[in-house]
Length: 151
Image 1 (tube, rainbow, N blue to C red):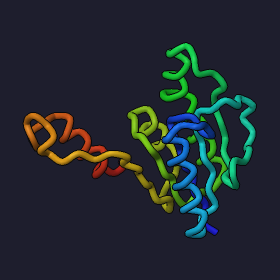
Image 2: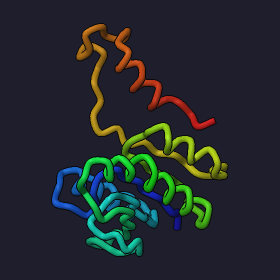
Image 3: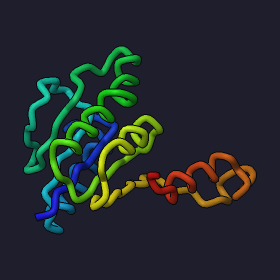
Image 4: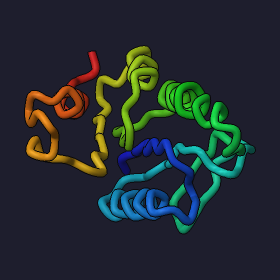
């Protein structure tokens, strides 16, 4: 069975729409024959693998406030735990919901030669929704993130 590390930058499990989306996507991967582990922010800081509705998950933070703690989760804790998991265990795929530069830097130091990288683009906007269309800096940056490989 193929193994997938699903990295979420939002709380899981939670009652939010993003948590419901994460759960639904994880179950779809399970139906397709993948063994899924969700790595996310959450209310459980024991850092033990638990299960929510049949989906194993690992929470790396138990604090939602103050704001700086959320920033530390996003910029340090989640990339650090992802790197640790990828070094210690074999995953056939990494599914991420948001790309940031610190996460990409942490992935560069891990051997991902036979690992597929999936990106979940929750929302996508056409060029017509930007003031300058395809010339818009934001539009080009989003396109670059989606098409750029890890080198």
